Length: 64
Image 1 (cartoon, rainbow, N blue to C red):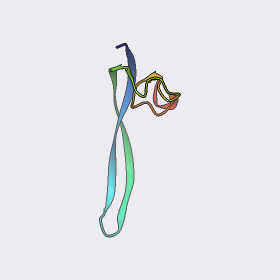
Image 2 (cartoon, one colour):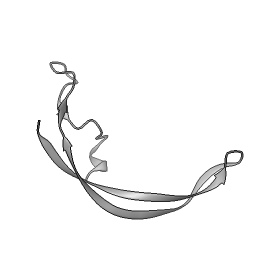
Image 3 (tube, rainbow, N blue to C red):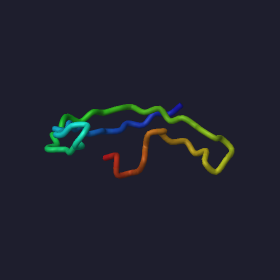
Image 4 (cartoon, rainbow, N blue to C red):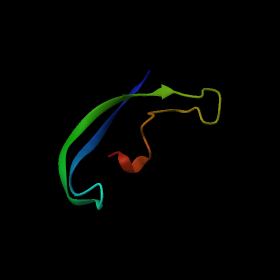
């Protein structure tokens, strides 16, 4: 199968709170960028929902 190169940004979160009162994100820290080669897989071949695409892509806004 074909592969495509993608670039992802990593983040870590400083979270405050507890189980009783709830949690909230206090701060966000940008980490490094990671390049991943994703293999294209075919699902539901022969149906309108069967194009080849990476299973984890939720939309173009997630990729650079």
